Amino acid sequence: MSPFAPNGGIISTEASHLRRRCDLSIQGNIKAMRSLAEPLQVAMDNGARKALIPLENKRNFLEVSGEIVERVDPVFFSDPMTAAMKALGMT
Image (cartoon, rainbow, N blue to C red):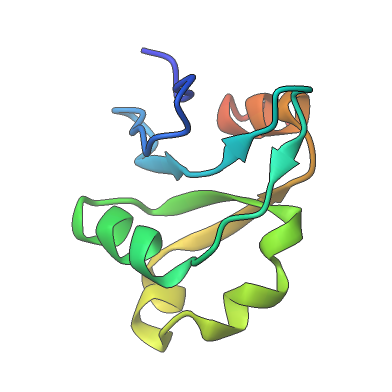
């Protein structure tokens, strides 16, 4: 199963408990998310241990609760290729 969905939804890889949430522009650029707290809470509640987060949202990570920060490790990415490599554990 691929960890990526064309609609930007949260998808889980069965083995690694990885969550990814972002949107892509029509040009294929990563768009920043409006909020991190709610999607990360949902991901954590569903067993996520890592979350792929757009680099544009790095500052927003300070708004995430301590409980989520303790249980879900952020993995930042700046482009779709980097996200794919990190999701597959190639970096």
